[in-house]
Image 1 (tube, rainbow, N blue to C red):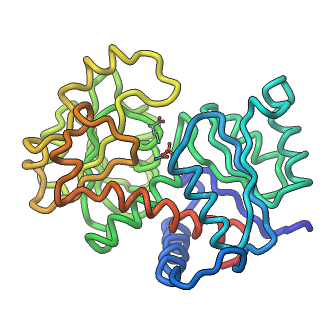
Image 2 (cartoon, rainbow, N blue to C red; image 1 turned 180 degrees about the vertical axis):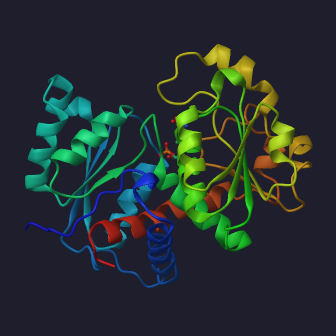
Length: 308
Ligand code: CP
Ligand code: NVA
């Protein structure tokens, strides 16, 4: 049945801070009521979410699958290679066909334009499950996690050390919307695109970009990093050389505020971007972030369907 009220979830740039707060609130409410949830019943009963994975996934795949079931719905797991997409059917036509069968589509695909083309041609909600350009679902879970541990993120500061990638881009998008400071350290060769930073600053974001990880981390409330080699990167050796100085270890963490959180979207490469001391340390919340993918995305799903 046609639902005129559906909404896509493509990028945090498409939202105001208030929308993001609404989605987080739905996610938190669903999380607090999770005890006693019976799979198969719930606000999305009878709905089917198709998931297309052009790249591997552990957390995104499982959290959307379980989240959908806990909201009463079902999922269909697809890969481009198994569909005619792999033989040249356009993403637009695929969107039109899927829209006749399923109630929402989540896609992980490197090409961000392909995500947009899918959304433009779909008549059901489309959710960004990671592109080369952004990873908004991850940052919703990260925001939820930060606030569970340290309260309102507004006025706090978050440091990023590593390369500029999809996860950082969604942090940059979130910063002016939820009013926190972002302090970014990357090597010059792997710096964030100027337009990304300028757009966030124009929206009122307080954003520092430096090549010095110590400068970025000094006095911050949270230190975030990610793998050095993202899906689709083909310059692993160069990245290892450039990024060695950006590792999050005890020495770097000691520059942050005492009690600063450590975050990582996972999967982590222990001994590369983060040491095990930090990853397993008392202020690491990496597994809370992983769990909160489930709760934050249930908020996103309910919001996309207008069910909450
Ligand atoms: N953090 C994240 O998106 O993990 P997966 O690649 O396992 O989905
Ligand atoms: N930046 C990483 C995130 C993985 C969840 C990648 O794109 O591979």
